[in-house]
Each structure stands twice: as structure tokens, then as C-alpha cells.
Image: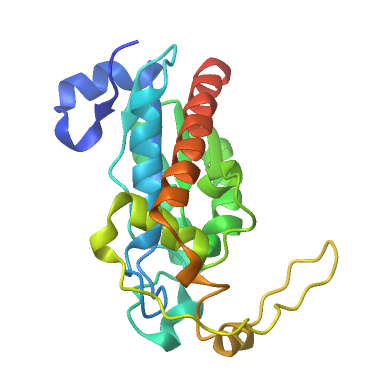
Length: 238
């Protein structure tokens, strides 16, 4: 199959011809605080990087079209720390649905959302169901870290810091070592949300000072390989 198209670099006639059979890839992230050591655009950067690299690697049976990344997500829980541009959950869902509506109106039939922010997960799931029904689209959705060999990624901890070191090391300030943060509350098979948790850990998890570029490259390569395989399978299935 031909190389992926970048939506923003492509003319309307080409898009009109390609969209009915193509698989559109939409990376979504956030612009939010990532502790004192990472850039606020980390989630958008990583979602875009994974999508772009995986699309270039995938030998898909249909054209892949890379939509511009959406750099804003649902991040109200990070507003108290500063550095955050957030959409309410309702607005974020509406934005995604408007984008899906736009794709469908121009003949698109298949869409995959690649998410880079934990606060977006439930909304992305709701979006996929709603867009499929409202706009007769086949919609796939995944969080890129599902394909990681590392343990639970956390927020601005070792995992994300290592990935950014592998992609844009100039965006990482040397993290300070710190004692183990308080354990996060957990109940088996129950999802919990509490703003007090973020305050108790100063807005970031685990130990970013342990991050290495080597681990970041290894984890990122594994994620990209798995995402590329997913794109191929989705192109066959949707």
C-alpha cells in the first residue's frame, strides 16, 4: 500500500478520492502539567509520535490518513497545578464527535483514535460508541500505553519521562529524586477518581529520576511495532 497521507498536507480532491476506502488516524492528547520536569505537551507529543511512526511502519491493505493531532483533552484535575489548557469532558466529547461528523460528511468510513492522556479514556470510549451510531462510522480506539512492556505508566513518572527522553530530550529537565509518594487508593475491580490524590503526590507519580533514554527507546519501539500491527489488523477488519 502507498505511504500514509497527512491530512493537513493534502488537497481536497485527493482526500475526497481517498477517504471512502481509507483508515483515518487521529492522535489525541492533552496540554497539561507534567510535574516540574516535563513539558506540558507530553501527552500530545507521545500520541502523535506513536501514530506517525506506526503508520509509516504499517503495511496496511488500505490507505492510512494521518489527521492533525488534537493537543487538548479533558484535564480539569490538573488545573490547580498550573500549565494546563483543558476542555471539559462534555466539550472534549463534542469536539471528537464534530471531527467524526466532518470525516463522515466527506465520505470517510473508518476512524481510529490513538489516545495519549489518561483523563481522556472514558470519553474516548463513549465517543467511539456514539460516533459509530450517529455517523455510520467504524471506529477503533486505543490508549498507546496498552502496548507497553513496562508496568503501569503513571503520570509524568519514569515511563513518560523515559519516552520523552527518547523523542525530545531537550524537553526534559533533570528530575529530582524523591521518597516514595503515598500509595494511590485502590479497590479491586473499581475505578476511583479523587482530586485529593493528585495533591498528595504533587501532580506526578512514581520516580521520574529513574528514567533513561535507553529504556525509553526500547519501550517506544515496542509500542510502535505493536501499534503498527494493530493498524494493519484494523485496516483489514473495519
